[in-house]
Image 1 (cartoon, rainbow, N blue to C red):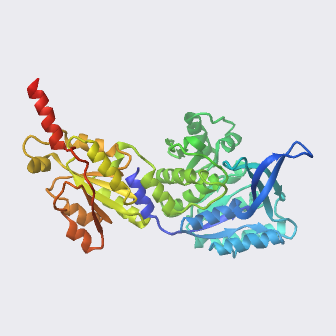
Image 2 (cartoon, one colour; image 1 turned 120 degrees about the vertical axis):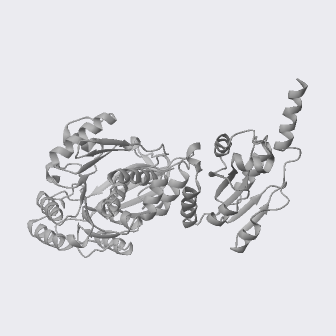
Image 3 (cartoon, rainbow, N blue to C red; image 1 turned 60 degrees about the vertical axis):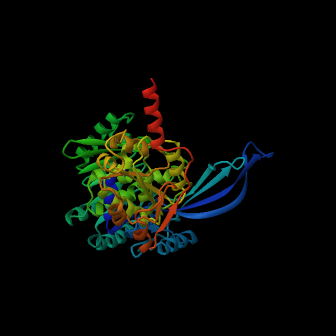
Length: 493
């Protein structure tokens, strides 16, 4: 878990971005792949449902809206029902379509995907059918498009170019847009097209090529992170970029900077159900962060999370800031990252409350962690979405239990507690009571074990509408009893 990244996300503003590129309408036909047809050796798909989603630059704009930023779309559709449906969906998502043009000579680009499930298991694509024109914009449309875009640039904090090689991102459009944005001091981020001439992107702020696109641009195979560093530096130098984000799917993102430095930002392992839209999500996240002035390093970290969440979904889905925040809060189960100081924990609790999570708090010495503790903590965790365990320090434990306690140091006790799956956060406090922590964190539920005659903090928690719960104890199990047994055995030996 990255406390820094949680802070960055929570402080992220709401910039306005201009997205330029190829607009695509994605249609999905879902069904059960029951058997092979008797007419031909093909899978028979029994249709159950269908839906429409935004694709290409339209998807990038939609994902930017999902990230709670404002966006204007600059693109071209045909004069057809698909174009009308695409524009209506963009407007419904809150995208400014005032710079969207109609080209009578081309159809709206449509990709139709047939998705089948076999024996009700996870769905997979069976077939994709495309209807499109890849010809460059006619000169008259290109002139009008450039004029519209130039009138918009200075109203935005960043320009994103989503090039799918469908004819909108012509060399002239790219050159004019990049030069105008650069002159205005506005960053330009490019997601290159599959058949792009990369020299057309010269002078942009950054690009986001994948392995294959990087090879096409540099001639270098990107098999390792070292390959990605070398290729990224070549892109930065030859295209006069400030930085390059080479996306490496399961390996994360390789960042190359124009000072010659580079760094790999790995991503954690996830279940991959569909890679569709992952590149658009990465572009949208980097674009929003770039527009708000985040560092390239933080852009990589956030893009890894956003792209990772995207591949866990079927089809193209807009990922929200709340989902990214939730993933940051729950994505890591490393023991040392669960142990926080009070300031860090307060920020995390605030983030969890923003997500509507119910925070559970308990406290104690937990000297010689035993089965009673484990059962109690597991039960406490079921009372909410997040369990915080506050741990008496060594000094505090000595004052409460006597000079021979604790048996286990506070560092070791906190590590053992954090290692429990049911515990989300552990914090050490030096006072005799947890009142200061309760005042600062204001948990939804305060929990104590059945051995505690008085619940310290009850009045405080109930005063702001919180709940106090006393759980049953495990009979004949306690730290004092275990210590006494150990000493008896020692003396007998």
